[in-house]
Image 1 (cartoon, helix red, strand yellow):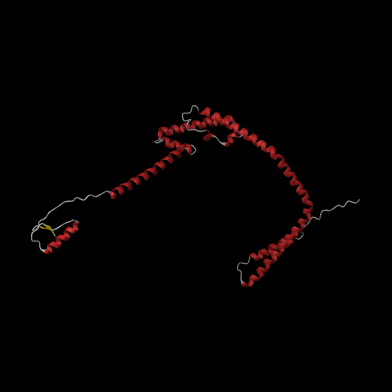
Image 2: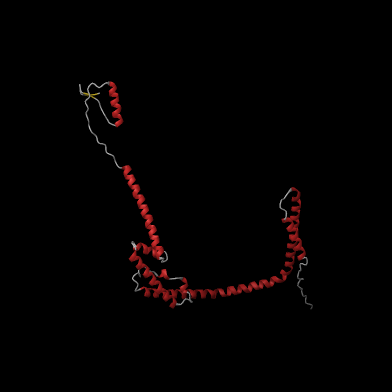
Amino acid sequence: MTENIKLLPEVPVLKEYQLVKDELIIRIDKLNKIITLTEDNKKDVKAAIVEMNKIKDRISRFRIDETAKFLEYINPCVNQCKELEKLCVDGCAQVKAKVSELEELEKQQKIGTLKKLFEFALEPCPFRNLLKFEMFFEQSMSNKTSSITVIESQLKEWIANRTSDIEFINNNTDEAQVIIAIYLKNGFRLTTAIETHQEIYKNESEIKAMISSEDSMLAAVSKPTFEKKMDIKVSIKDLPKSKVKALESFLNGLGVDWEIWDYKDSKNV
């Protein structure tokens, strides 16, 4: 029985590689040297572009055909490699999940230990009601590589710094509780907390001054005016009619309500 042995195809060699490359560079350089496109040279330029595209297509076709000749031999090996890779991933998935669960459990246990350490270290601090574990804790502290001894040293320094800063605020600032609240919220930056409070106070003062000014202006505008009413009787005998008109105009100009009485019969005319 004769066994048929299928030989691999000959490895393709692009013998004209350098020749084609040099020719393409010459053609591209020639096209790029054209600065102004005119009706006279446009036809030649378009023809050169078409020819370049034809060369590209022939090269692409050659590459695809030659590659396909080897895929028949390569694909079985490629598929086997992918199968083994998947086996490695899927086979370890279950045990990796168990490792992750165990590591998470260890982290939670370490966090519990750190919380107790925090409470114990914070006990002598006069401001322990203001300081919380979450303010100190960082996720990296729960890693197995993080030393509890080192963390304990960091905690002592952290409490000392917080105590010193809060005491400074209490002893040297007005509205200490407001500044402390800002200090605890902004990441324990003492100078920033004080400056932030000053800026807030300044803005509030300016707003209050503006409101006060507006209220004063409104009060002045809306302030009721009181008219004083007086009854004045003037007796004028034998006043010429021309003078009567002048007197009427004068009284009207003053905004005075007036009436003329005839004293002969005491009737309003």
